[in-house]
Length: 161
Image: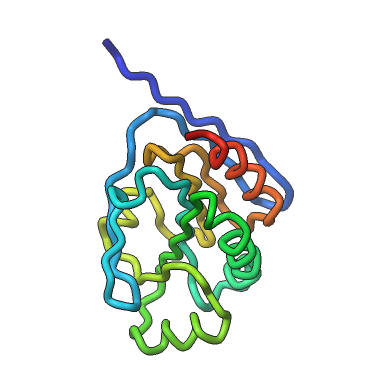
């Protein structure tokens, strides 16, 4: 039987692309956070996860931080996890100072080649992926994404068990 994979792209606003990806295959990935702790996709099965690729010099990325912070505060108890993956080669100390300055209350890690390849991330940031409780990417946002849009993505997923 042939597996069917469909990706639908919509242009939204000024250059932002939203893609709904549905091939049913969970992504397998891991990153080591600035705290030295490894985060694996397998440990997040059962949670709704937002993985956002960002850079400290990226103004739209910085503009998204308060929304991600608010979503963690509001939905973590319901099973939301957020992982911020920095694509910029920063020292752990510099990255930690940035995290502290912006009060990032979620896992932050430098990227690794496997992460970029697995998610198909190259030069565009921010790039945000919404992953369901099975580990399957259900939405991809390329460019700045508003809190309301992420909330609309995650709310139905958080209700499903």
